[in-house]
Structures are given as structure tokens and as C-alpha cells.
Length: 62
Image (cartoon, rainbow, N blue to C red; front, side):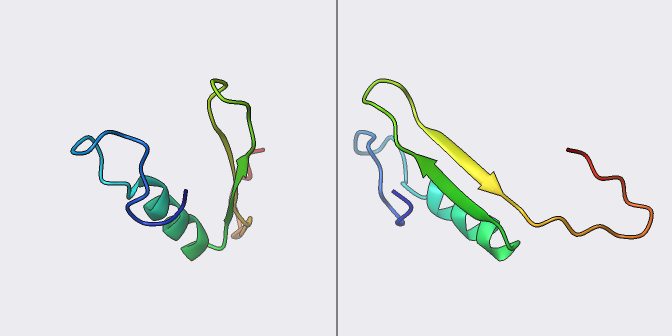
């Protein structure tokens, strides 16, 4: 699913680069992306985790 050019869309309806690019951005910023298994027809759930890097005076939002 995270491989480049993977798509479930009809030909000409997508490039299959969306999740590949998302994963690259997440990992480049020290994060991780998880895919939650769901039953067919229930949609797809992803969880993104990023490290917290607090600078002096930065406000942390939880």
C-alpha cells in the first residue's frame, strides 16, 4: 500500500503516489505511519506519530 504507484483506482484515475509521498514526509521528519486493519467496507484508518521537539517558549498542544 505504501509502495509507489500502488492504486486501487481505475487506470487514469490516480497515480498511486499519495501514501508513498506521505510516508516519505512522515519518516523524513522522524515520524511513523501505521495502517489499522479494518473489514471490507469500513474504510481505512491511519495513525501518524511524530516526535515532539520543544523549543524554549514553544507551546505544546496535546
